[in-house]
Length: 308
Image (tube, rainbow, N blue to C red; front, side, top):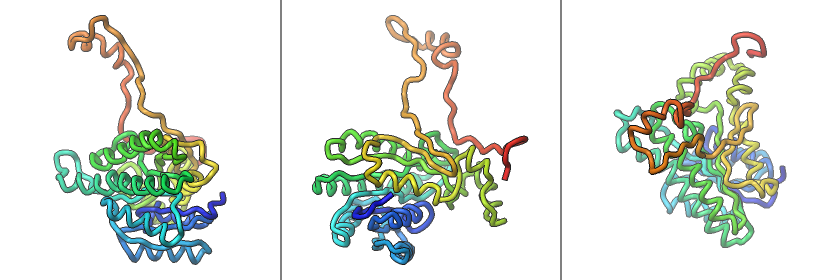
């Protein structure tokens, strides 16, 4: 995939998935503005992209405010003359169960993930519309936003909101030929290690230095950060011009299209539904097959098939 001539901003690119995105975009030919709250980490990644033959500059700052978002766009224009791709990846965790989560825990995560996505996407959309040549907004979500996750009220809510914004902005920016998609990645990162379902497996792979099990890559769709980067490059390219308003999952050996929320089962009652009528019909009617929730724990094969 050739991204020569395109200019991208990647937020939260100092490590993990963000670094993989920045490096993959640079390898594909895009000039990259590498953002991270840690200036030294941002500079290190930018230097790595340049050392590999790409073009990159570092622009440190904590995303969330309109000022930082504007500074990232201005850095792209100043250094490379334009902006074509905005990848909103920056994020933090402040995990607590509901009754222990403070206002500060909630606000900090929403500020970076949800507001940071909004301000960076808005600044990018303004610039792209001024250029008049279209563009790409790639918003990073999470399985927690699609299904919920224990102890992650703030994170799950923000990530669900990001997918909702992708659907809304896809409509609003269609006439400007700016596509907007949400990516739902699953990869072995410091964040993933905090998820009880995955932590023991990831810690064991890290301890032994061995690869992740084949069943985990295939059945659970969990692999390395590099496994996710190909989707970012695709969505940044001209090849994805017809793809917008989607939530796309990727990880390990799996690529998936997530469904949008929709009515699953329907029932009608002339004159409307009383509480008693709902109670009488729920278990055999609309509620006969309730939806599941939460991220399922990984299940290793018990017999047959590859286990390594």
